[in-house]
Image (cartoon, rainbow, N blue to C red; front, side, top):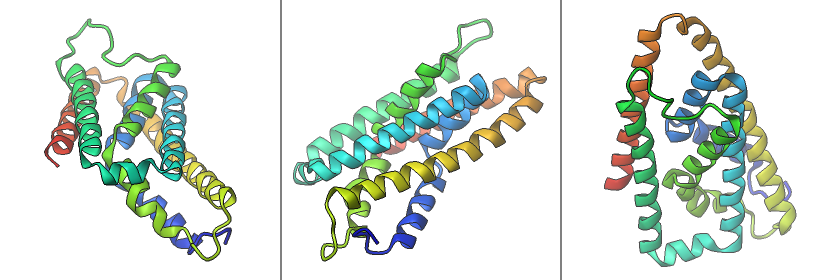
Length: 203
């Protein structure tokens, strides 16, 4: 189908990829908890935009360059690890009365979602190694094949993110009346972000 070796398997793989716990999911949840549906969807579109950038860079050959020069990939890992740890530190050390560690303006949530995705080696590995497996060399149709794959990924990511944002919003409305729980969740998110950063740095 459109030069994709197994479209059904590709859809399933993308879905599983999204379900794996990681910084992208945490960005959606944190954004929605702090800024509501608007902020959560802004982060969603940031993730989608970054996915498209990574995919088309892979198409352009950046994946091959990173494979040929492992130092470049390790540099991306360290930059991503530092960024995630910095976000986690700000959440973890925030005190009552301080300005929000992460601003609520949707345009900043868009940037946060995009940066976390761009700096996430898990996403980069997907485009370097996993994504090319679904391109059928015998029936490849050039930009049409990649365009269909890009549109499919954007659509699945949007649906998945909308579900995550909706569920998070419903829970946030119930928890908002309990500031102790909200603060505990914020600290927990900080710990997880630092943990993600340390894990990426140690790979």
